[in-house]
Length: 320
Ligand code: ASN
Ligand code: ZN
Image (cartoon, rainbow, N blue to C red; front, top):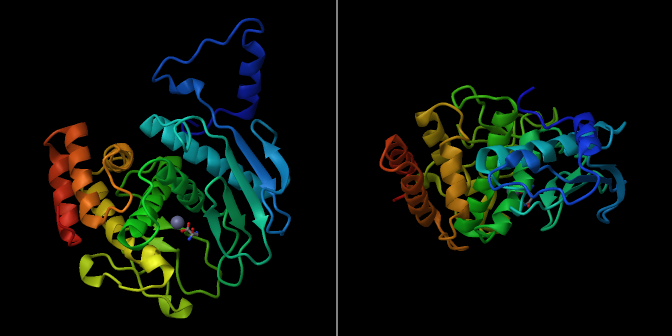
């Protein structure tokens, strides 16, 4: 299929036909075809030491363990969106090898980017295997992209922006893999991750923040969609996974107003905002909103994008 990475067999074949003598000519700028991911998946074997035992490297045959293969494929899908949609070569923009460890810890109900690699737990009574939803894999890798670009401080509004950026790119990777337009996407993060013991469909919804699952069960505040519902709390680094609902919803409003593939215009604006170099690490929602307007102007001029963007931020109560 058009949107899958080159098959392992094709990669091996290409290597065979590469010139044996002499340097391989450098890829010309903009030649995305020459850039490929460099993935390694490790098995932590239920310990908490990283990275664990290497079980699948780039170009290796699929592993008998489906969790290993899902992590490998999720890294590939995220790499591909970054490259094909935004011309970015991996998480750091410079071909960073992508490393993941699966089966981390015992009954570990989370996944995270530790600053250098991805880590996935097998879940607990609330969550299933964290490699199941591709958007969760992409969410974690996007923390790496943010780390190498805007470096949004993981607390308060800048932390909620950091979380939101990961949800936005997580959702975009899922939409890209499914070649889905904004109006067809479910805009959920982590669909299928919750066990039958939780009432809900996913971790979060960009379309309808606060509705993904029954928060009472987990003792959490529901996500707000607008500034009226902004939650002031000292928990969760100042509610970074709660208030992210506000910029998440702004992105959803923009992407669905523009229509088409969300990564092409809305996603491009968010990516430009993150990488322009003008956003401070301690940016608040209003700073970020203004930066999106500037990024949209640079990329698209004063067209429909700007109008839809101003309307989206206004609807969630963030000034521009
Ligand atoms: N899964 C969580 C996240 O990526 C873990 C964390 O870093 N707080 O947001
Ligand atoms: Zn996160």
